[in-house]
Image (cartoon, rainbow, N blue to C red; front, side, top):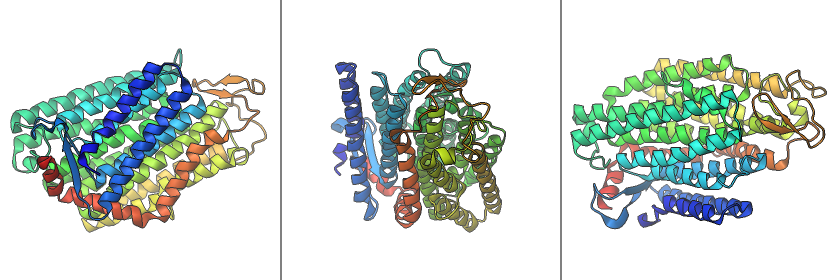
Length: 515
């Protein structure tokens, strides 16, 4: 793909979003516009992956052909292409779920999702730290709107508190990140990552300035000690938006941490021990936080925090094996976590509650959803032949190679507790008799009527089962994680290519400087 086409990953979603707002309340046109745009974006991302699969490389473009340091640089390599592909697929699948669950029944849903897509794509493709800040804000602003739209009319107290925390924390971290960018410009005279390549490894002031940016990104990624916001905010919106955010927001922050440390710090090993320690603490804090939770989404949100520790361990090890395992884990986790949120979300939308123990026997009543949850849960816990086993096993081997025995022990222990938590959800929601509803299940409101659960989720009455349209997203993502496990050699191959680009950033830097 020509580098001149890269800005279309941002421009096209923004343009279609504007057109959809102009045409007004035409729901079919909105759905078609969103579908077509996402399919084009996914096709472009897959094209990039196939281009780079032969031997890495990078393509870049400076918008309007301004000189380096002034132009907005867009650059793609294998790592960026993989992220563009998976984020595009997840956005499409989660939008499907939102339409099936009735949460997209507003004139603003498709335009907001498209603006969110433009921000995500821009953050993944930019090679300029200030523009990274801009694209993160472009990503966040529609997210605030989606968070509010999910509540519909008057939100519950939990929804209001979650939205307030989400907005406040992101405004704070964006401010910290912008301060870091200002410090970098003041100490290095540039915020172009190609011009900053290796500067933090040789200049202490640049290292400290860049560390401020990494600190802000670590907060956005929910790394210990500032991790609790995610477990409060994510379950406070609708299941569709929770699944969407799980695959985009924290993962863009993780991608940026990988990229910045590889390019600006040039993988400087002097600071890696801090990353290993924080990753281990994040694994433990997340999995222990899930133990006392009583709703499916709260348990999954805490496990999301725990798994972020695994993903970032790849960059903390900063070897070829470690980076490849971390990238593999990142891509696997985006799909698996979305699948879990979508399968439990389908039950929550349909039956009006996500509380563990309020329903039982879903494996008998909803066998398709139960199968989708079962596959994704075993993959999250790291059992073969699922993708989670390959991800964790590769990461353990990389940690052993670098002598981080404590990290290996932590990973194994956390995996065991993760499995127990998945069994907790299975026993509390899917196992048992389906003959009678549990005490906390919403009372029937007549066939086809609407019952509202105490947590603000609207569900149809218990006379009908989950529709194929509502179950489809969970099934598709569960099949994807199974395919990733069975075809792990292919994904590990492209992940290794992406890791090589992080270990040796010369191709990335040259592409930006020549654009």
